[in-house]
Image (cartoon, rainbow, N blue to C red; front, side, top):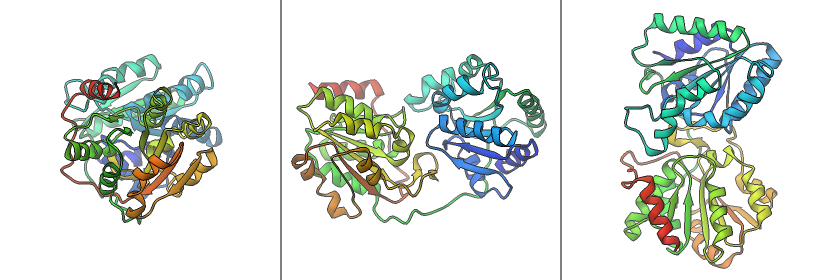
Amino acid sequence: MKASKLLEQLENMGIQTITGVPDSTLKQFCDGVQVYHGNLKHYVTANEGAAAALAIGSYLATAKPACVYMQNSGIGNAVNPLASLANRDVYGIPMLFIVGWRGEPGVKDEPQHVFQGKITCELFDTLAVPYRVIDQNTSDGEMDEILLEAEKILRQGDQFALIVKKGTFEKEEPFKWENGNSMLREEALSHILKGVSHDTVIVSTTGKISRELYEQSEKLYGNHDNLFMTVGGMGHASMIALGIAKNRQDKKVLCIDGDGAALMHMGALPFIAAQAPENFYHIVINNQAHESVGAMPTGCRGTVFAQVAEAAGYREASRLEAMTEVDKIGQWIVEKTGPVFWEIPVTLDARANLGRPKESARENKESFMEFMK
C-alpha cells in the first residue's frame, strides 16, 4: 500500500498529529510522512513514551486522536504512558499505533529482535489494545474495514494498533536531506580505535556505530574482545558503560554513543556526572539523524551535546570538528580525569556493504567477559 494514501485516510479519520520514532520496517511510511503534502503535524520524539505522551497532550487540546508510530522494540518505552494514563481505567485517551514488526516469528532477523518479535502481539493483548496485522497482501478493501474498526474504537476513548510486517508499504518519493557535516563516521571511529589502547573497554550503541566498530576492530586487532556492542536497548549504552566503570576502576571505559540514542534517555548524562567516574569517557557521534533506520532527522537537530554534557556536570566537554582533534582522544583518555565528554559531528554516509557481527550475541558477551578477567 502507499503511505500517502494511508496518511490521507488518517486525516479523514480526524487525526491531526502524527508522532513517533523511526523504524526500518516502516522506512517507506516514514519517508511518506516527511514528504506528505497534507495537514498532519509531524513530530519525531526522543523516545516512544514521549511520543505517546505528546499524543495525549494533542488529544487534550483538540479532542482529536493522534497517531504514534514506532518499531516494536519501542513498545516498552510506551507502556508507562499507555497503561498509567491513556488506558480507559484512567483517562481514556484514544490513539492509533502503527508498529513495525521486527523479529516476526519465522522471518530471519537480527538477534536483538527475536524475542521482542515473539511477544509483540501478546504485549498488545496484555495492554488491552486491539490490533490488526497488515502486510503487502492486505487489500484496499480490507484496509478500509480495518480503519473503520479503528475509528470506532478510537471514538470510544480506547487505543488501536496496526502491526506492520516488512514490505507492507510501497516505495514512493524518497526523503533526502544533508546535515552539512563533512567528517565520515567510519573514518572517525577508525581513528579513535587506532589512538586508544587495546586495553580500553569500549561500549558502543545500537546500529551502524557498533557494526563499524566491529569491522574496524577485527581489521586492526583480529578480534573485538574489548568491545561490548549494545545491539538492542537503544539509549542504554552509557549506563551499561557506567556500570562497568564503577565496578572496574582499574580499566578505562569509553562509551561511543549516537545522538539519537543519547536523546532517548538523556537523563543518563546528569546521573553519570553526579557519579563522577574518573575512568569514564563518553563520545556522542552526531549526524542529527536516526541513520540506521532510514536517516530521518531527529526532532532535536540543533542540539549541541557538548553543551548539554557540560551543563549536566561532566568534568570536561567539547565538540571535535576536525580529525586532528579526534586523533588526540587516545592521548586525552590517558591524561584526563573523567567523566569527559566529546561530541563528533559526522555526515550521513555509510558503506552499502557494511557487515554485521559473525558471532552470536551470547558469544560476543562471553568473549567480552573473558577480556574483562
